[in-house]
Length: 492
Image (tube, rainbow, N blue to C red; front, side):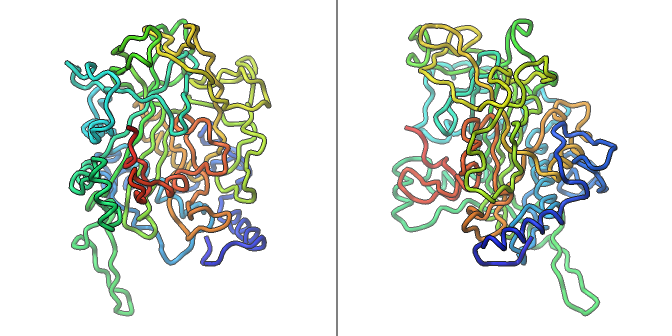
């Protein structure tokens, strides 16, 4: 970290890199992609920290992981300008991400039951102009079922897994954000236009520890310090985006993965223009969670621009052969040659992945979008070309390495969740605003880059492969800055 405020010169960049290296633990010359502790020092992660029971629940109790959601990151020190991802500076944010994730998934030990997030409205529930392609699919929807319809990523691309099935997406909005949208008329196009004309800025509610709950502590000099407790307070706006894989109905005929998924029963709503036979359809399937963005607005420091957490299933994809660290700011084109495949076939020791089959060839460019006008068949594999032939699925790799501190957080939390399906998920990173931004530093996001291999599969190599950086440009459909969310510019 640094308390410099001016735009970075080449000399300050090199100085910052030196600070970054000094802030990392001993032996930080390699990442351990398996996210396991290796007894040989010199491989990352090297775990030397003690994690007490308060790590796992935001109220500081020993009951964690728990259902109590964190509302703020009080450890944030606004006196510093965080230019780089320092080991200990990141830890509170990664803790926040895991606490938020597990609280939303409760009850953790009963994954067959609907979790807390499933009570949140979807984007289609909240915005009337975003209808379902086949509204009849909502009729007699069994309790606990998801109703899914979206299979386009934000880039407009389609992701197909190695079993030949589409990946589906849905957005959920917590009650705080839902109330703000409805109370301000932002759930309709006319309301968003009126709000823009009012001159008021869009500002979703901030999560904060209640001032009345703060502990007053006197120093030796007699001064009073307000110490925020670790526990909850007022929840802020929270936006969730899920990526779901359709589980193969014939495991013997389709690639499987070694570790289980969090699954939900789902119905897919399809219009006549989306299906191979030209008829609307409702498909009942079982889906497994493969990716998630968890976005929450908090009060502390620069957190008023949201804290962005991204999770994936551990069997999604391998790491690219030329993967980079998330603070690669020396160049504006971190992957000028693209993200490269690490291995070409399973016989080379490649594990089984849901979105990588080794067809690309070792050292060749991966993450190529699937071309063509794809259609839904009435049976698996669902993804077909217009002639009805199954689609050749792309090879997807992860372009960005995990920060060593995040790898440690994953190891600790996965051990805590041992014996549950949640041990099969990992945090890719937690992004937050740590500095004023400027040349090479984007909008001030730390870490500088963050993408999800199943939510942003085909843009990971781009210079704007940064969640907060991309969303800083978000506008409503009335042209008003929308406070880091594209939710208020819904598709018509």
